[in-house]
Length: 92
Image (cartoon, rainbow, N blue to C red; front, side, top):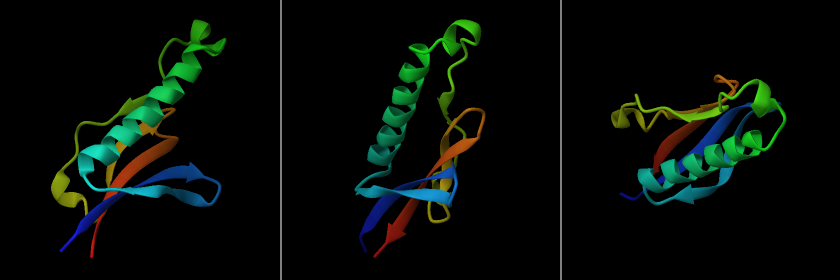
């Protein structure tokens, strides 16, 4: 049995958005989410909002259980969970 990992995010007008790329490992999917959060944080640091509110909007979650990957696990968020990032495993 083969496994791929997909990333999806909530907080979109449609409800959720599935990223258009699948990953061969959980770690690769997590790295992609981390890069997305880093990009969001860097953009925020460059904005005028950072001077007034220096708390960065994006964060990785570290309290998850890999055995729940078939259902999707929360791995990161932006703006205090307004947008949430999940990784889900698919078997074929």
